[in-house]
Image (cartoon, rainbow over all chains, first blue to last red; front, side, top):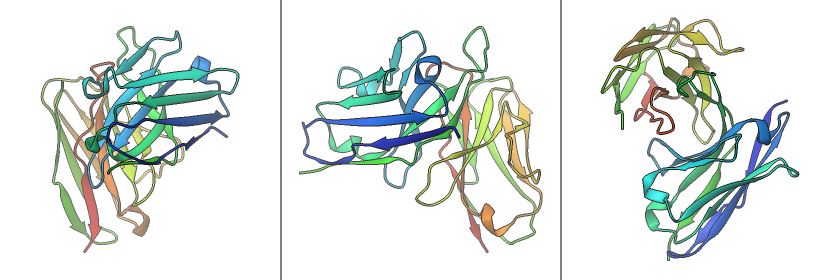
Length: 124
Length: 108
């Protein structure tokens, strides 16, 4: 069964750091695109970061320079290192596999499956 | 970035009703549009990809249509387990894929 399990969420003060983990089973993270998508309380979904198969990454502008996505192929796990956290980073963070449609321009991808989510609360 | 606007933001309906949710893109996105269902306290789940392809295991009462800027998700006969929030997501602008704001489907 293809599955993702997040861990590492919690309460952190503004300016603090936290690292989320996403353990995959049923497929290899090294041959898949893995993404972090967050959902602030009562709000919609926002793509935060993506790790691509070749090792390149993407992060949305609001977290650039503060969040780092990485992976450990030996543990089949993807991480999101979050530094200089702000109150507006408070959200449930979901790990999701971005399914590569195979379009030459990178279009057509979708997110499946998703992990159960990890709550990150940034508050003093 | 492409803006995705869903309507309505919320909707009340009864079991057995036919329901349609609309998603509009700020520019043409061809058929690069996906739909997700999210139940309270749970992660989103993929329903439809590439505007009209039904994900494996999803009941056939769900269907998607549209291309260009206007898309619809239709539930032909609402079941109790369908009351949830639905999100569209464009997949035209990698890597900056964006989601709609969601449509909450409630029991009347």
